[in-house]
Length: 225
Image (cartoon, rainbow, N blue to C red; front, top):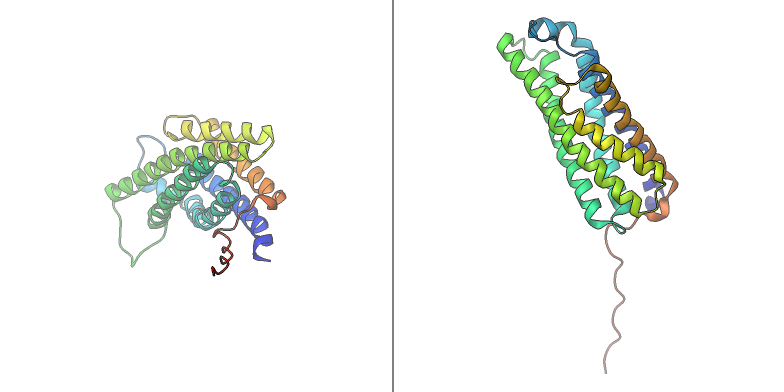
């Protein structure tokens, strides 16, 4: 029962996590993009709602993508072990940075014992937020590209490979949201969410690829006379 439910569980986690992460990226880089030269404190107050929603979505993405990524690794590690290892390592590193992002964005929008943050403190937190997004995008680009290579070795359709390759390249391009226009920043999370959706559906549709995490116990050797 556990083995048969893993593809559905992992695919649903990938879809939910990808949607949450893509939505959070969109809210931070497009909806609440700061204006150069303006007051950071005023921007934080104006974008508080969007940042608060993004913070909650980042937490959902963190939990779901760790679970979904591990199930996907379990499905593709037999055919492409190196690609699968690179995928799961990069994804887990990206999720480690997301933990920091949850804390940073949360401190921007939620009061903590009424501790006031000045302009310089908000500027530091906002810089850390976009620096964290930069690192997450670079790591996700590696993870998605490695996952695409692993899926190709597992018989995934060509269009899933193409979408994954484009989504990975888009993550690297979108790693600099302060340099790229809004339409690029908006397209990057859409491509990521699309690939996560497609990968999740593929995983649900191919439960036979899942391998047990531990090898089957060996039969005892016959006793020698």
